[in-house]
Image 1 (cartoon, rainbow, N blue to C red):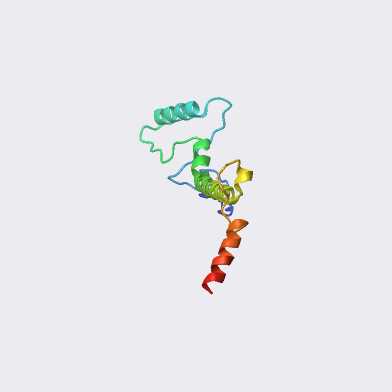
Image 2 (cartoon, rainbow, N blue to C red):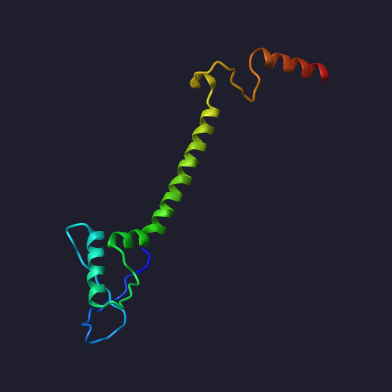
Length: 129
């Protein structure tokens, strides 16, 4: 299994004598420190067979981290984009609120003239017509 989205593959456990192969996987569980067990197992296996070649030499936690990295990276990316979108939306909503709700003293900008400005605009438009 290489990724989280990969469907499970069938697996059959057979004795090494029934199907000889150049590749052997050794998986061990410990209640202690996993890197220490890994180091001790490697040392013991090299003492038994000095020409032994290790293809992968890692703990299960490291294997799971490597397998889960694409899913975790995607989740971090989507979360970051979502936070940026919320920040931009909050800034946009704050800018559109009237100043009396924001606690500022500046005059609120509106599209339609109000009060005294409305009379002036109507007088000036009547005068030019």
